[in-house]
Image (cartoon, rainbow, N blue to C red; front, top):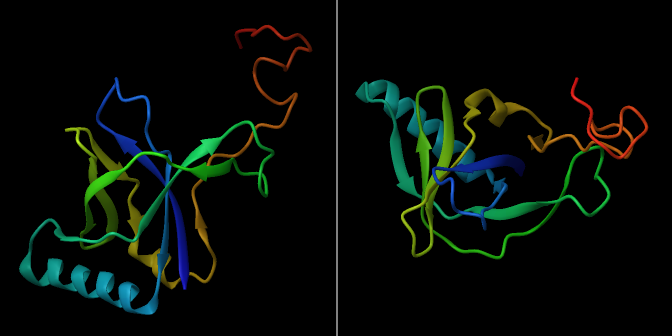
Length: 147
């Protein structure tokens, strides 16, 4: 089983209740499906192939909790998503869809196909800035200082 933790982005400046990350557990069958779709993209000479796929679990960054292995902690996303599609190109893949009952489209970062052959968890979470390490605390005061 391969696990991906990848950022989610959307096309709205006004949507405040959005997911930050998608967690995807890829079993051997889905890994082979993604690889087969990439071959189909090359054979058909098309940009991408998309299919409905609902394997994503969505999370938000939990900045109030201690980091996990130096990465931001996550908590469950309370919103709902719809129309999840797996999108595969000849060299990478990503998921996309919409926030439920909106026209706000979300999309994950792309993942290179080569990641599917790597043994470890593919974790693209932000690095957690420990207390005292952020730009507002570099100079010992609680006030931000421009670099």
